[in-house]
Length: 507
Image (cartoon, rainbow, N blue to C red):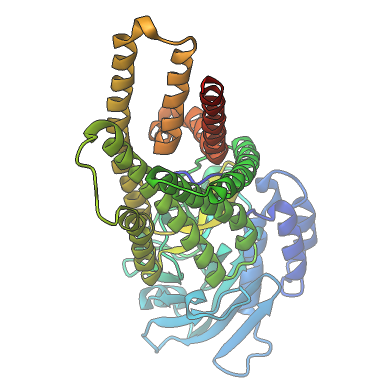
């Protein structure tokens, strides 16, 4: 997991998953070549594995089997698969509509998949026969390895078998996938081996995707193995970059968390504090909470508890928004101190700042929580994906980016004016400058960059050829943000101590 980017682990079991699952299905598959096909699955080439052919034959055998048929419907259950076989009469002239429970351990309504087979498809398949058996079977994704190691919704693949190939339907077959969270970058696809030679791919030809808030409807004019592909063209990170950024993030956040803890302790130990100290302390608290929430995120995500995931996502979003607001407040206070100067008294100044700094983010998080905008968020890589608890709605993420953009513009204006004043003061008193004053001015400006959160603006360069350098720079600087705040506090404390010694010796 990396520091949340503005773009921000389901890993396939691969070919060995194919071997294991085909072994578990051997009781159903009567094909004499089944063992030979299973042995070929040990190769690295999906085309040699022939997973599609063997699974397709297995599904046909299951549908044709008339054993244990005590009623109109027979339930099929085995490791890695679940399904139904239905007897259909030629004179029914009705669509088949049914719902399949998910392969997962939970039995929520959101785990259900609804399948509707049109009467047109049924009549084409039954032909001159009086009746036939219809199979609808759900498989685990691990049996369908592909070169991109694609991520599928619910990690499930639906097979529909009518005993004969069906294509070019005018009244399409529909499959509705229900999910608890709002998802993006969804695409209905089918498993395609033939059209791409020896490489297996997920193909969207003949399928239409209708995306809803908590459901995805696939409407296809043919029969095969169907799934919903997640972010098919959205590989945001290489696997090497993900690992490197993860290590950098955890080390940086760990150092920052410790540094911020020390800084907060030193602020608390101060007997007297002015407005500036209170604001700095609040910013440190927001950063401390953000680093803590981020370090806990992956660990809590691994428990797969939805309520816990929502909680840590809300906490991280709240601390991030608080950090942004305190960046803006730092800029506002700097404006009062160095630019406006006169007539700056504000009644209940600290209380009002605290209400803005901590209250407005709280309102935003409460609204997002009530709208169920928190949950599992996936970052895609070349070899799979990783998950964290974060905002699931891209619109809310864009609003969060917009909030920081406004703070960044405001802070940049204040920083530019202050920088200009410092330069002007240096020029006007150049003959009386003390040795090392230029270095102190540079350190002062760097400290202001840290307090105003200007380093976060690097993420706006996250595009094109600058994407990866921007990600690394952003991750390094902002995971160590708390450490830089500590360095600033230490430098100022040391400077005050030196000035106090000089003043004492002069007296």
